[in-house]
Length: 83
Image (cartoon, rainbow, N blue to C red; front, side):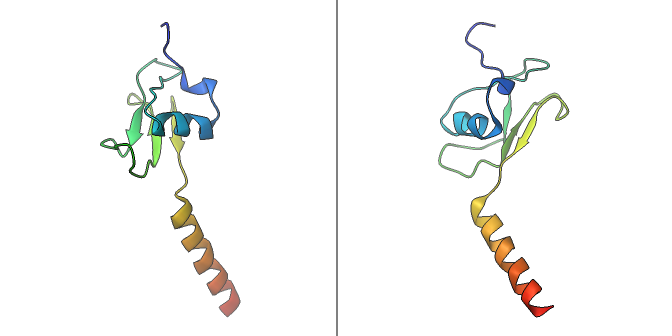
């Protein structure tokens, strides 16, 4: 398995960054090539995460959409202010 980087060799943030930059990562359990979420992801689009195609129990990272998180936090603050 020369030159195949296992996903558990990176932090979650670095694994997502590596994938966004076009790099390949492999499942640390079964050695399958990880797939993107969404599966038809293309560079420049929003990457939701990466997962083992065999089982999410092997490897799974869900990335945070910063824009969606800011919007959700603003709604939460607004609701807290009304309570």
